[in-house]
Length: 62
Picture 1 (cartoon, rainbow, N blue to C red):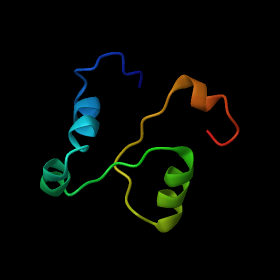
Picture 2 (cartoon, one colour):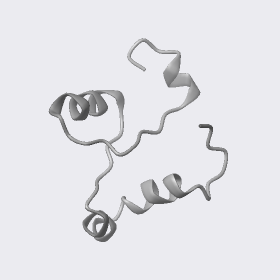
Picture 3 (tube, rainbow, N blue to C red):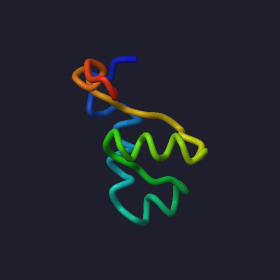
Picture 4 (cartoon, one colour):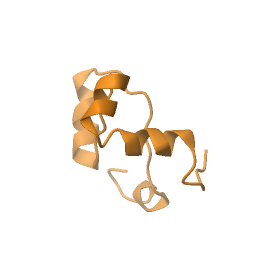
């Protein structure tokens, strides 16, 4: 699914998770970067969703 609007619910949620009060309220946290994403996936944590750029898809680890 292509997200082309900053008013998208997932984008808003990701931005809200920058603040501790929103992370506590939602029971979520955000991770950024390929390395941390790989570590989260390997840990067995439940991942709600991921966001990535078209440029990342072109890279080997993307």
